[in-house]
Image (cartoon, rainbow, N blue to C red):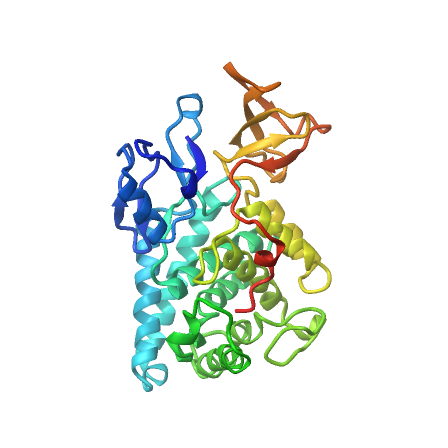
Length: 374
């Protein structure tokens, strides 16, 4: 199977992987021939990339980051807890949130078990979801990226649990921000952006009062938009003034923000998201955290079409552990000719060859690649 842009789909193409909503329910199944109406529906749902059948790459089968059942469970728990917080001012002070925090800890433990058992580089593009409830799905995605980074950095189990809880709840303060501002498709006014920035303070004030939530997790919610050079918010603190785990979540948060569809722009591919992180490495983001992210996450996902420095074109067939930028490539075209018998090239052994382009393009200007503000 191969990964393609929804914009390039044609009627009659068959999906190789189902499309799910963010609660894990199937919207369009695999092996169904797409109609023009279905393609338009995919675009309306905010799907940017899909996996399609291709006889030359049928053996390429990207693995899911976590099971559909665990994803359903996690999203439902996040939704239930977040909406309870939004609808009841007394909820945070009650035993109900204490019980919810215990369920969150169990979810973090289950996520860790599945991530540890998956030896492949981490990617969420293998799981094609329509994100109707951005805050919930973003919270789960940031948690998984944070845990993947934490595992790469050999954090202790206690640190991993803390960062998991902090990541799950890092955006809970957005529930107190007016929905019309959060979902505004155009540029925010200065006043609207000031309101958005308050979500870090809202989250901190709520979480720090909960006995069963680690205080560090509350600080992760407070500081995940702070930057090493002091350019972040809400306090504009610098360097070591920002808690290390908050610096880690900041990297995961930015990557998922640019790798997911937002109301004001389409999703980037992972290697484009990594460019964003590298552009701020050492100034906005911790270098060792960005590097750990690079080692843990598949920058060129399985099935992605690529162009090599020697002109050959192919599909990412398999990942090389700890070498996310040098996967194994299935060569499909050479010297401008389509190959009858494709073959694989291992870029970890062919060091003089690099990936210079991807066949799936999303962006046309640098302006769209700015680091997201919230």
